[in-house]
Image 1 (cartoon, helix red, strand yellow):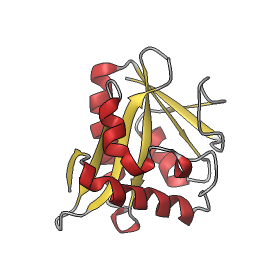
Image 2: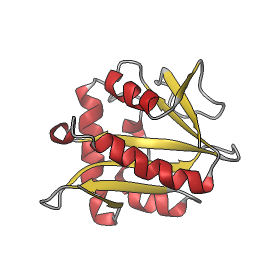
Image 3: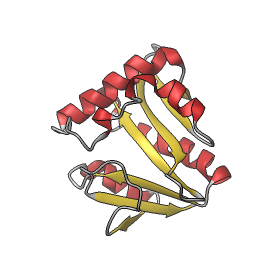
Image 4: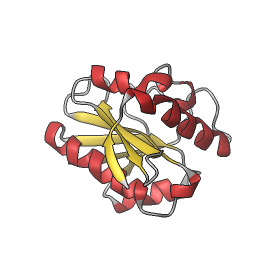
Length: 158
């Protein structure tokens, strides 16, 4: 798998991956990434943010099969947020999520002191990965959280 920065041509595919993944868990509800206004233009959105990037994973057929982003978290100095980590069902179980997270965290270490993320307890495989990569679970979201449907929050010192 090739991991590279998102390009405008990837916007529609990664939006479909994110929406399909959320739908598969019945999470196409307000308070999730499903309704983020920038979902159809992630390449442009991340370019406009300071110290932010979004990466996509591309398979041998040059098809986007997943992605992940890092962006500043609200007005919190030194804290970034790991965002929109989604991969296709075909790419699950291959270690791709870990590769994407490592790319994102390598970038984050250069610009931030901590990385925050929000998820749901029922996404057990994802939660296991976060813990394995050194994220510590929080009891509540950080102030400034925008995804009210989330019920699990993590932070990692970089």
